[in-house]
Image 1 (cartoon, rainbow, N blue to C red):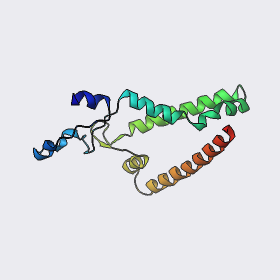
Image 2 (cartoon, rainbow, N blue to C red):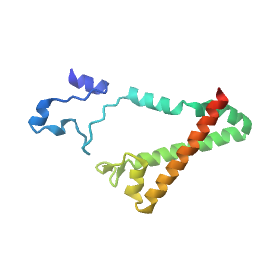
Image 3 (cartoon, rainbow, N blue to C red):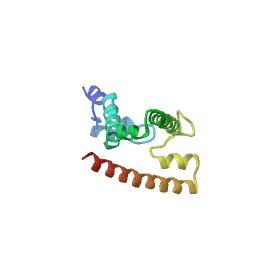
Image 4 (tube, helix red, strand yellow):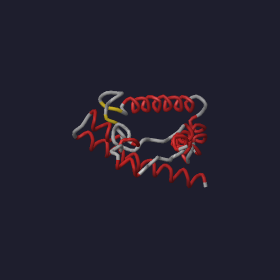
Amino acid sequence: MAKEMQKTSMFIERNPGDYENGDICKNLDDDGRPKRTGTWVTASAHIITAVIGSGVLSLAWAIAQLGWVVGPAVLMAFSFITYFTSTLLADCYRAPDPVHGKRNYTYMDVVRAYLGGRKVQLCGLAQYANLVGVTVGYTITASISM
């Protein structure tokens, strides 16, 4: 029953006996963190909540402002950029070996593993600038949509 629950929900089996018998690694991944228990349903929910937001509300208006030729061209260009960067980030998930390397959980970890040095601080600065820009954009879009 516990194995079925672990595959279909966020349930992680924890027995006090595991710690006493020295079998503490039973619920840990190869990097020492608790095992991930996500399913395709939870992954789909995260993708849907990330994609559908106030930014999507203004997409039709923005494409209409650009016209029938430039609008779809810009949409295709940004979809290619999104695809390229997502595959690049997926390739950088483990460093330096794609199978047994250390996991990189954040963008900063990826930059630290591959570039290092001052570039980690520049990445942090770029992330915060992007966060401010997205926040301003979502605020304006939400107020226009209201």
